[in-house]
Length: 113
Image (tube, rainbow, N blue to C red; front, side, top):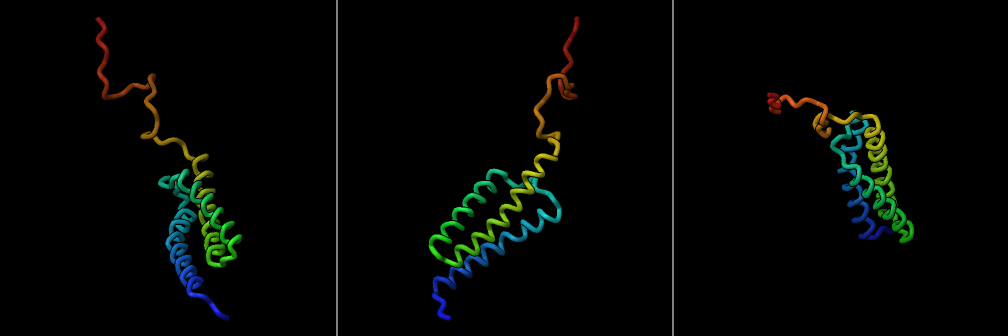
C-alpha cells in the first residue's frame, strides 16, 4: 500500500485537531455544563465542518473526509447540548434586565412631602 506524504500529513493534522476537541465534548457530556459555550460559534463551526466533509468527499481525500466528518459529529453533540441546555436553564439573576416594579436596595427613596 503506497501512502503519500500529503495523506500522512493530513491524517496527523486531523488526529491532532480532533484530539484537541475531544476533552471539551467529554466535559460537556459528563457535566452538562454548556453555559460558557457560544451557540453562534458552534453553529458556524458545525456548518463549516459539514462543508469540509462535503469537500473531502468531492475531492476524494480520506483525511479531509474522515476527520471533518468526525469533527462534525463532535461539534453537533456540543451544539445539541447547548440548544437543549438553553431551553431548560432559567435566566440567571445577573443576566436579567432590571424590572421597574422591583425595588433596588441601593436606590434612594423618593421624598414625599
